[in-house]
Length: 306
Image (cartoon, rainbow, N blue to C red; front, side, top):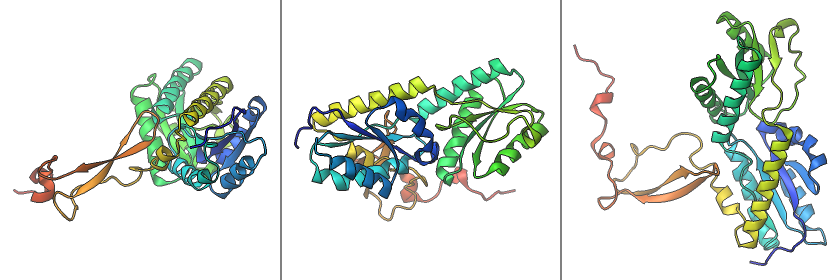
């Protein structure tokens, strides 16, 4: 692999449903020189191709701006880069994701403490743009963790396709005895056009950005620096990115394996929020699943005897 030049890297922040396809990231560009924002897909391909055609030959680093709830965006970005990288050896890298699900949970727990401090009686409503059943389910899982390990305030979650979803959640909280609520974004939204505090939104307030501007800038710079370092040592991050959405979706089960002992792939999640595929041989020399060979678990039967 050719070595990257010593020129400063050009950076592309690729956004998905956690950042309104990148629109929420635009305010950061004033503090990030040589940086652009793009959605995934053809827009990313066009942006990266244009940067790679620059005569100075600077490396290009793509940073997936996700808290870990959009692994398909990361995999799509990696696929785009995998087509472009062979044409520009040593110049293109995919950085590690901005954050992980554990980071998101920790930031939301910190927000729960702050909500409790500001408004001790207020509920916390974690809100995010509706995406797909799996990413939305992750939102509710994280809300449960924040509720369980939070500050003692009521915590709910809503995947928002329109203001009606937000209104319905606030009304449900009122019926449960929580007339006050603070809406906390589970993404990169920094402001809201919803008329919180007025009319149907009386008693509700917008929390503000989940992560401070300086913290976001610091993380992005760290991701870029790490990606450039990896590129200099022959690791462009693209292969890992291609596996980002492995295991995301319907759970894998051995119960319907056609052949006992057949080898197949598991995906394990590691600290950078990406899945890495490992193949395990489920044969007599490996670990064995008696339920796959023997049928059902008796203790899970739905038949009741009198």
